Length: 460
Image (cartoon, rainbow, N blue to C red; front, side, top):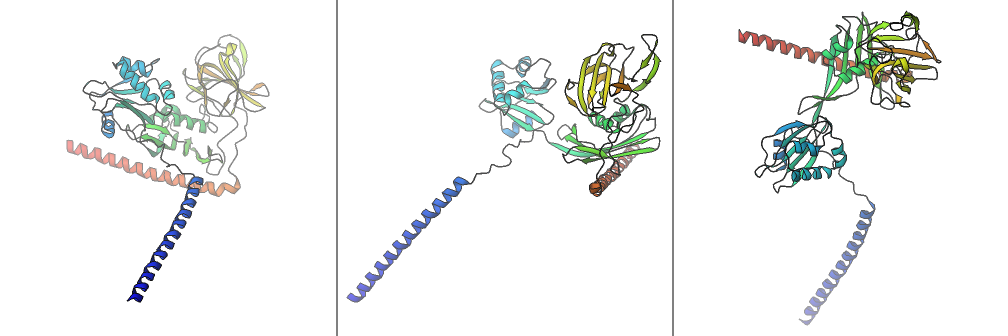
């Protein structure tokens, strides 16, 4: 019996010892692992979420925003526009917000990212939707700050004002427009539905190959393929992306140009064989004008005697945009005697161009500034010695005026032989997209016609 008890005691003692050894081992192991993890955590940077600064989608109305954020109820939403020389504070004062509320609204917008800059750069004509605060309803604002962003301001249930910038939702839409020229390209293109900024881009692109004053005839046609970004809430076009394809048919002679980005990601245009659309200078730096006086001897309309006319005159309405005929540096932009308001651009060591009798300059036109071919530099006028609104245009070679109609200008850089296969594949993708859009447009037109026919049958 005693022997059995001793054996049991020994077994119990060994079990206790073994447990202590295991616990001691685990303690050291955990301690070692803990130290290692701590070391790694210290050295590995924590990555921030990628959507940390993403903006939420805007609501279409103040009512919907109030429901979304759970703010103090509003009623009787009205709207006004920010007037010239008006700040947000003075606008709120005009629409009967009390000083205490105005101060709180300005403070909450100031606390936004770049809030003070936002307040100092609110655009004239900006639409302000608002709800006047009272003891029963909350104060709220919706500011259409830019084409892509809205600022909402609201009172929470504790009457504190809060604000947030929201991103207006948008969608992209591939658009193909075809048109026939009736009087001039500018008016016909606008009537066909081409946005004005895309039209100016089109004129700039074609200006290297087309003489808008002498080559375009009534009945000539055009096609253009581009991408529109559309505001989902208002269904209005926010902006357009660079033209993908443009074509003009001039008395049966067809010109096609395709967008192909260069190594810097900038759009360049080439025909189907990879030849550049560009020339050193555009043939004509204006659209929608009539050639009213050529280069050479003429009887001066004001001076009354024969005098050498060292340029071309293009008659056009005052305010018609004038384009830079080529890339270059603006040498002069100001008054120049009988020339009136005048711009001169240095393009190379050989060529310069001059533009006279302007009504005004583009806001970016300054002496010493680099200008790109096809960009607006000024507007048609009748300043200086002039009998009516027109552009006097000169081409200067080695400091002598020459006849712009007779100069032969080198072309831009063509697609390289090593890249021609990639380019042709790219062209085919654009043509496939064009065919798909033509089919969609035909189906839409057919559906509309069938609807109109059905409507007539029902009415009759």
